[in-house]
Image (cartoon, rainbow, N blue to C red; front, side, top):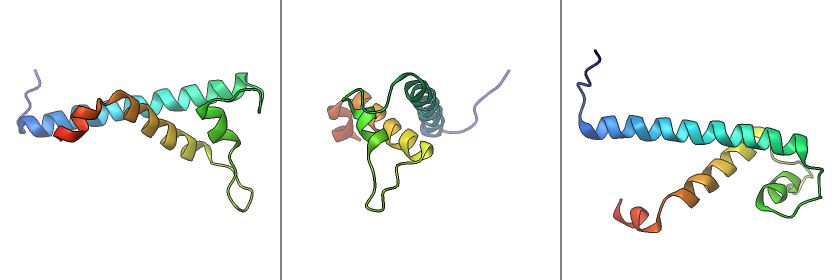
Length: 87
């Protein structure tokens, strides 16, 4: 049987890291499915806007950048504003 010998705060940090990893995997899978199923320019939502956005030099966001931004948006929408004030 596994016994955690660290503090409760460290244990909570590990759990939060695992949750974040889950969010990133969900975003990665969702973006891949979205790109495969949706015709470019056919929708007007946040993800479509991110995918079609271009930098000053005409380059688009990489898949990794898309996953990063989408993960932040997902987490931001999941955390109640009051919790952000408490922490």
